[in-house]
Image 1 (tube, rainbow, N blue to C red):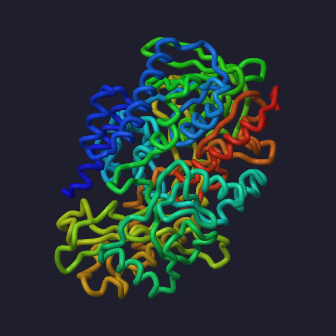
Image 2: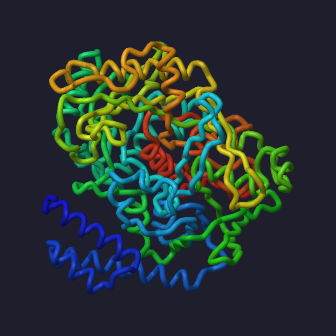
Image 3: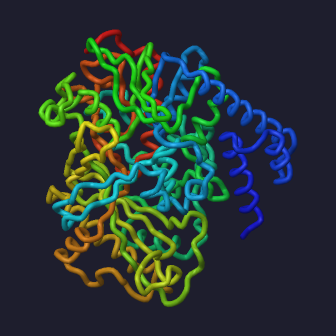
Length: 574
């Protein structure tokens, strides 16, 4: 293992341990100096970590019954809201997180091990209902149960999407969410190692960079895509339209392949503030709604039920599955469904929990003539986009390359590579529903994958292109054969997708924002007809982006924070 990698591992683990209070200030300082950090910098880092630990310890020991803002969930959006709403020091902010704070553990810190979180203590462990159009398979639906949420357990792919995505948002919910506004906030989030660009940031909160391109599979992927008419663009995050490009996605990891989550970028730096309290391992079970106003929340804290009032607002940041869950448990949702579970109806809101959609992808395996060099960096090997229909304004297909082929029967990982086509703009829509009134009961998650024939047709075209890339001239020097469905016709491709498609776990749309009065939240993400209540997370996206959703969610939350701070909250129900 490289010396610089070991050093980086040591430093980052020390930082995480210090913020968690697992190491004394003195030991932290000495360990940093021993790892090569200059004494002055080590002293500053040690002081900040020690102060954060002391401040949070004192505030947890003296929890208040009321805060100005109560934020439910310290996932990607919740971390942004916590940082921004506490930044001026004037407002008291309580963040309640159902998971823990241990982001220094290996399966989180090492971005290459992200799948080890699924089904463990750092995952809420949701699963879909049997999916009729995917051979009745049950699909795992991972949701991060840890500070940072999905940004702590995802694959660290950092993409902004296409202008057409945000044109759709603007059409649905107004100019707050158009391309110009989202890109301005994308720049606030992004700290790109290559520096600031036209629509990307060089001094934002999350450090991002290109993964290494020094691998034959990466070169092969790009050359093969170019041979099929794709236009190479090194930085796909610095152009408005990505509909016909091939290039290299970013990753939000440091030079030592350690994850930089929303918790690292936004939450940890804010924990020294005496007006911000992080309450981990506590589950919010209900919103306290009376007289058309959300007055606070009810939470289980160390086995006891506690109420926390919100003087200004409650901001729900639970994500695409858990935000509608909490609203429905609180009596805000489809009336018939709530009555079915004996939940008093506070507000009949039929579209809460509807409009669920997600990204699907499949793996296509190619064998090589002999062992390939081991994967470098995160193992990502290029990306390309495609429009399955020339009439589309933006891409609906995304294809990744992968430097090896892990977990393939009868094939060593180093003797293969992958192309992974994803369906990015599905037309199929599903629902999130309660199984019971018990807040701890599993959710009924039904994305209704592939219900629309248009999705089948589009994904087939994506698979065909991914096969063509994998068999392209760029791989000619070392490709042996296509392992997955060689020579397949369209019907065989459809069956392969039905038998093998998996989620990117990008659940969106279940509390969709919109200008029309039936939309669950309005143009400022305020829950309609309930005062002092807002939803800020991927659930408010009216239409999913054509890319992985973490960077768009952070940008959305930055815009939401601006709206809150600007005083867009109304005093009464709307």
